[in-house]
Length: 329
Image (cartoon, rainbow, N blue to C red; front, side, top):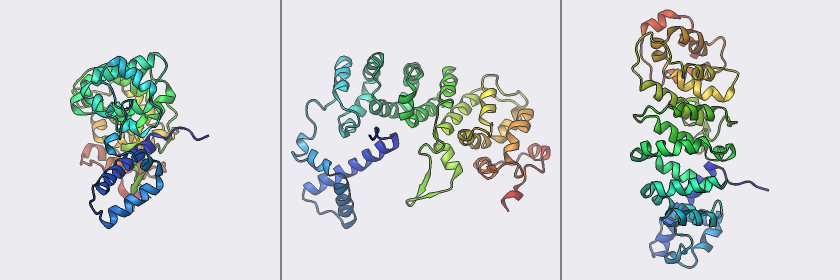
């Protein structure tokens, strides 16, 4: 039996359906589609014949009364219970708009469902995407973070990209809520896949892009969120790493944990900052990653460092042999 569609698969279907619906409306209006548009419309129609059946009654009746999302907490709860998982209408019924304009109504409805053991993943995914908007980050973090901490692991894994992107975005805001570290710790112990949808595709072909994969992977999101949390402090030379973050950074540098490779690449992009703040930790933990003789992944870590390279002579003087570009020749 096939399981529910993955997060990335659901997003792909949503995008394809949005394109198909727009082309269908243009075609229905009598407008002659261009060759490329007509071919794409035909391809999507053949791949998803059920979409044509859904629209057979005309666009005016596109959504039934039961499909239009209500605006009140109790009605939202009842409505979500009636919706079947994975329905395309979950993207077209106004849920996204309600998440933006009725934050507390949607959050409290999701909370009520969670208390009954129900976590509608499609609704949560879209809600977190909306609440990642700059204007909603502080409010959503304050009220949603405690609920995310209680989210069951299977649910969390299904919407992991939406969750970690929201966490990274929230970490840029000016707040001193230490719960962000707690949530980050929880994400890092999840059984994540090493690619987890972070492969880089160009012109339909997968390419080897360790940096791009790292910054788009959930572990990369979490690593950046931890760095953002650190950067909110006043950083000074030789202050040392903060006690609450140093152990996590050290864990991420454990090369026996393959999934943390994405985090290590992101950490290497801040090599000079680490060196200035805590030279001993950096020399012992982070710099060995760039050693061409000992690390199969040294090329990836160098890409991380070269993402935002700067010349800092004390770093090169400290380890002239290790910090060498000769390995790229």
